[in-house]
Image 1 (tube, one colour):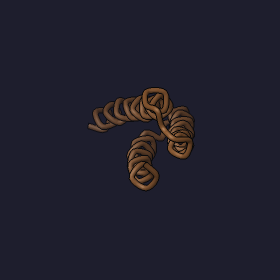
Image 2 (image 1 turned 30 degrees about the vertical axis):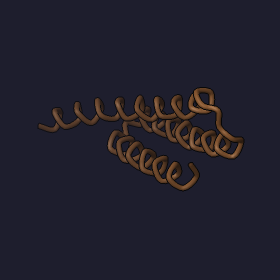
Image 3 (image 1 turned 30 degrees about the horizontal axis):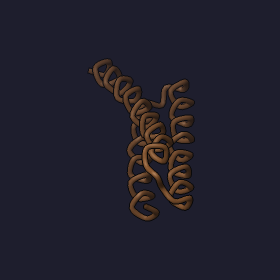
Length: 89
């Protein structure tokens, strides 16, 4: 049973890193897709910085096998990016 849970945690943590990385890429590409004012571009780049730093932290946690913390960090990052977007855009 423990191996089963560990296997799913590893899989979910890898998916979490990919999701946050894709969020960072989407956030960086968004100003190129639309014609946005400079203030909104700065907000999008700040959001991309949040996503990239959390992706780095999650990757470092992967090396230390902290799978639960990776999942928690990914959920927290997505919530933080959603709040950041609602406040600044």
